[in-house]
Image 1 (cartoon, rainbow, N blue to C red):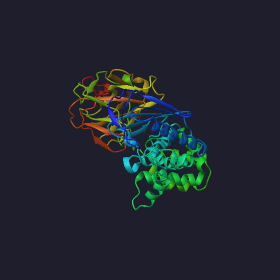
Image 2: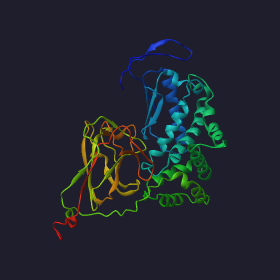
Image 3: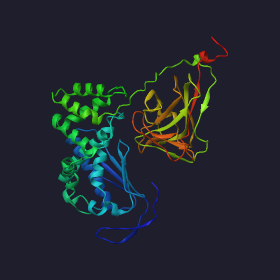
Image 4: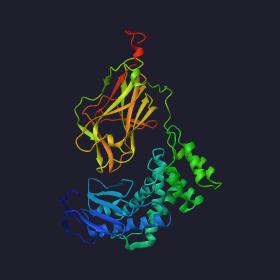
Length: 433
């Protein structure tokens, strides 16, 4: 972690001025906090919160939790907290003021830690959660996080936080107030459905469902059928079909398939005279990793009977030295961003280090005249790929995932290129060859 030398003001009972020094570490039995820019009292409170919430997640809910929850605290331009979905959280604060009670800081740190532990509990087991809507994923973290806040209060009470306040208001009390409102947000609606599920299967009945869903093979175009079958096989409660029928449309994200047929060709059937299409100028001006979305580029083929043969991406992997044991995805889509074909690729195709062109060979697939190629890495704080872009965009670079909404990328053009080829049968100069 980098050094911080900016002088900040310690806000709380003391108004002394102090300078942040090298990163320090506070350890408890099941939590470790590495921190700069804050005092030890808050580091201890963060560790105590994570440890108590972790214990409740295991003991009360039977959920999968890491042996140690690691929290990195650093100074940044704005308060932010996120997780790698496994065992780490990353908290940035502008100063120690961002750790004061919400009435002063506007930041809900205790709830935030519990919320991110909810994501860990889900993502450690359901590693491929691309079928989940925001209402499902964030709704779960909101539901469990709210309940974990209550559990932390039962463990530590007002003594937990240096800036003492009654943080029970940030737990299920707040969730219930949201649900009692005229227009609950989508996250609260999702939390309500998870609450109903817990009411049916019990607090410890959700963990087995997560485990079963984590092993489910499903059709991305319509995951609901496979997920429903898994749910009803994992638990025989007669109320579950009704719960699923009520919840499915809120929780399940579909990637509708294109009406354009995914015709494929064998390599020997093509001319072997590939043409490259590109939108970028070859001069990287920046790079991005996009959580919950993908990098997409719209292309125009010259005529018909063209087949996509490869996709080239200029970028590099970040995160742990070893690539994650999972695939990223390359999608061929029609002009409406509906999936024509999906090409899973091992993360190991990208190396850490300097950005470079990576060529991803695909099963040759026919493209419509206007088509979109999207690359999605499902990135977190500790794994992902930075995709480079040039300085000026032409309007054909997008952000989004197939079947979902897409929006223009204004920062330039993604450095994503494609190669096309035609079948030998399309060569009018050599008919029958």
